[in-house]
Amino acid sequence: MSNATLSKERREYLKKKKIRKTSVLFTQIFILAALIASWEILANLGVIDSFLMSQPSRIVKTFLNLSANDLPLHLGVTCYETLTGFLLGACGGTLLAVALWWSDFLSQVMEPYLVVLNSLPKIALGPVIIIWVGAGTQAIIVMALAISLIVTVLEMLNGFLATDPEKIKMARTFGASRMQILQKIVFPSNLTTLFNSLKINIGLSLVGVIAGEFLVSKAGLGYLIVYGGQVFKLDLVMTSVIILAVMAAVLYQAVVILEKYVSKRISHLG
Image 1: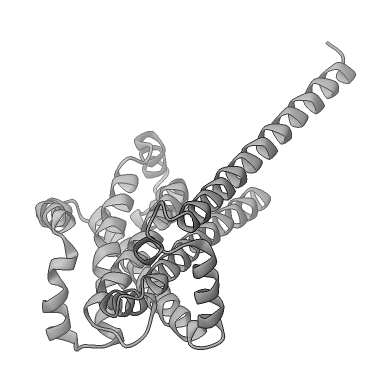
Image 2: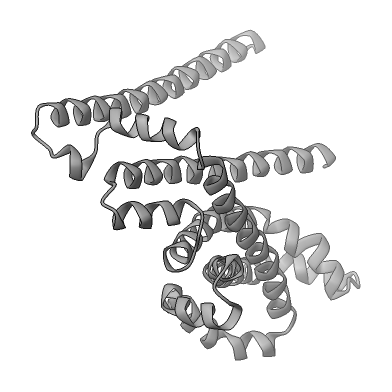
């Protein structure tokens, strides 16, 4: 088979892939537009109660009103709390996973505690956390940290323990220390595991922050949702929920972009 034929087949493959990707995107946009249009029409016709369910036009008006007032403040507070809890959970969880991988004895001792803590609903600890650290931003960050930390430890530890034992054995044969094995084999082999953990934890951190803002906050998207429910401003509740969904998608995509950048840098260096 000639190079020209291969090149032609490659072009055809890339063309089909691009068409498929475009088709998926347009279908997603069409479904979203259809849902929004149906929601607006049904509300206008009185099929659904716009007071209880709100409607797109009212949500847009509420969003514009929020944007002209305190939305940047509330959005900034939630974003700050989420990123702080997320980064602390990712860094602390990875370090703890390294410590557990380093010591088999410590890993075996801590395993049942980690399983129990992972199964425990962290929101139930909310009142206790508030009493321990105070009713403020710090309590909300601790809530986010509590949710994301254990997941990171378990994900990274399982990845470390699943690293190819033959590579580790070969490194030990050549006299590599445990630190060198960690730096050269174990950690690089688990970059995918790390980023998968980050993708999960960015959402979990946001859940922890919103749960914390439900309990104790004077600002943030969670505060807006609780306030809107208390005064029966369902437009405010729905607007805040939609903003929250967009924020979650943006944060997730930020992690995806970071993963692609790191992967490209590593392949370039390699």
